[in-house]
Every structure is written in C-alpha cells, then in structure tokens.
Amino acid sequence: MHAITIPEPGGPEALVWAEVPDPEPGEGEVLVDVAASAVNRADVLQRQGFYDPPPGASPYPGLECAGRISAVGPGVSGWSVGDAVCALLGGGGYAEKVVVPSGQLLPVPEGVDVTQAAGLPEVTCTVWSNVFMVAHLRPGETLLVHGGSSGIGTMAIQLAKSVGARVAVTAGTPQKLQRCAELGADVLINYREQDFVEELRAATDGAGADVILDNMGAKYLERNIKALAVNGRLAVIGMQGGAKGELNLGALLAKRGAVTATSLRARPPAEKAAIVAAVREHVWPLLSDGRVRPVIDSTVPMREAARAHRTLDESTHIGKILLTTAG
Image (cartoon, rainbow, N blue to C red; front, top):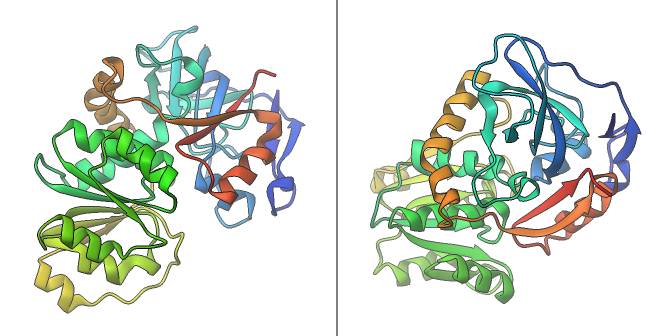
C-alpha cells in the first residue's frame, strides 16, 4: 500500500507519499481500506517532530479515517467485511489501509457519505468527551468556543445547540464568524478586534460562560478564568498559545471554577472505546436525522497532503480538510 511518511520532520514538504508494508489486523482489530482521512493540528505537530504516535500506533499521521472493512481479526464481533465505517485512530489515517481496534469503529451515519464521514470521529469524540462527559454542559447554559470556525468549533456549536445551550464563539474574520452564526452561534467575537472577556460579559449580563472549550492554552488562561461564570468549567484541549501559564488560584476559587486538560490520542484503548460508544449513542442519531452535519472546507488527494497542511498552516479554512485516497 501507499501512505504519507515523514522521513525527516519539517514543513509541509516533509510529507512523502511512499510505498510501505500492508498492515495486518491482530486480536480485536479490523483492517479498513481507507477512502478518506482528515487533517488535524496533531498531524501538523507530528510532521514538525513534536508529537510522536503513542506506543504501538501506526507511525504515519492521521487520527481518523473512513472506508470499508476488508478483513476482521480474531475476537471481533459486530463488524463484517464490507461494512462502511469511520474510525478514531492513534495514527495511520494518511494511508490506503489501516488497522483499527474494533472499539474505535463507528458506522458511517445515515445521510453522510463515506468521504465526509472521515471528518467526524476526532471532532465528535473530542467535543462530546470534553464538553459533555467532563464539563457537563446543560440546557440553558452558555458555552464559549475558541476557534469556532475550526473542525472542533463547528461541531461544538452544533452539539451545544442540540441540547439547548447558548453558544459564544471567537474567530478571526467576519467570514468565519458568519459561518459560525449559520451553524447556530449566538454571540460572535472577533478576537483580532474585540476582547472576548468584555464581549462575553456584555452578552451574559456579567455572568460569563458556564463552559469554555479552549484550544489556546497558556495565552488565554488568565482571561479564560475571568470569563468563567460562577461554578464554570474550563476545558483545555490545545496549546496553540503556549504550554506554560500562571493560574491565579484566588480568581479560580472566587468562581468556584474547575480547569481540566485532556488529550485524546494517548488515551488507553478502553477509554477511547468508552468515548466512541457514548458518541455513537448520543451524537450519531443527530447526524442521521440531519440536526448535526460535518462541515467540510475542502477535499485534497492524499498524495498531496502537503497542500492540505499548507492550508491548515495558513488558517484560512472553515471546518475540516479531507484527504482522499482516490485520484
């Protein structure tokens, strides 16, 4: 088979389409013929040499994929050759074939084609696990999503609205904010021109956000605490703004707030399987009836993954960028 390899870390040009050995499914695993994968920030970090795959995972980038099962390993039940699936991966999505633990498989939702389904596993699992399983967003509460036009942001808007929450977003251009509004966002904040703490307080009569989903990390830590409502929950899922920040415990105590930080890729298979099962139960019905949809920016041949990475580096996209094995 062919896969995107990284002979040496670097810029987008470091991604090399090469012939590699076919993987074989082991106990509890299936082999998926990949139709498409999707580009995530973690792939960029891996390309740059800053984010190695967890032990035992494929060395190739790609944290999600969609396609059809071509082989079933021993000990697998409930899945058959030919099933259309999408999957949460520890790596290996940028390839024509990938081995997946059966607990990390999801059926392609009704009404979603197999290519678009490749952009669902990472965002749905990230949003559901952080916003709902950890931060327990409830109807009537306010969620602030940083990077509202990203793949994670566009899914967070839709899922929060589906449970009756109010959604505020930050984004860097009027076009990105307009797309967020079309998805249901109630409060639109241009972070280049506005202070999100002040704008959020004005929009909530001074209360702030009950839950904040943050991809920035250190750069936003102090202001995120200021933006929290009493009993608010800050869920940190990224460090685009740095890894080390100073936390004012007095301010956090005054809010009776909580700060959590999670990653998805390195979790044990059993934890990933539990998240995938919760997503299948709670999110998949919303996808099947059309209340929630994947937001796709563009589709690029997988062999041209460098072009997709340049788009992500430029941050001009809205939603997910997909890579297809066809073409």
